[in-house]
Image 1 (cartoon, rainbow, N blue to C red):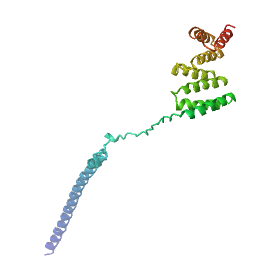
Image 2: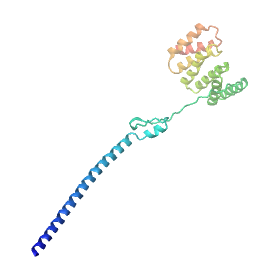
Image 3: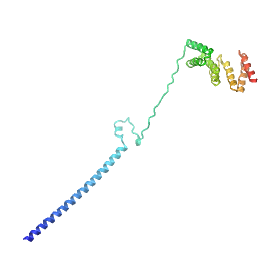
Length: 219
């Protein structure tokens, strides 16, 4: 009887161990299944994150077709555009031009050449095609000449040649161009201009100035 009881106890202990081992195996199996599920979920999460980074604006573009989705997240830089508007000056009336022209001459006679240039520039800017503009440009050249800025003076006298071939200052401007060349040491250029004036304009009223400059060149 005692032996039977001991045997029964041994069987009971063995069955408990077996059950315990079976429980451990089941837990290990469940852990393995969970690890597989976690790995699958991690892969899905990474795939979703990658797709979201590639197309961050796709949903917005679908809802708002006017928005252009940049390819590969290349967003062009918008450069500020500036536009300079050039306002055409209003033409001057004859009275305004006459008043300003006479004022410029007074400044010239007073040797205030900078003020004279300013007055004559206003006329030539506001009424560039008017006959008085050619006279204003001529006196601008004279003012620069008086300031010994012979390059600027020649540029103004040349404007008479280019823009006002019928101006009463046309030949005068040629003489002054020759004189600027003399002052800058280019007597060869001056001689050609002065001799052309004697040939083409024999009745020029200030031919004595032409002869005087030619004698200066020949020295």
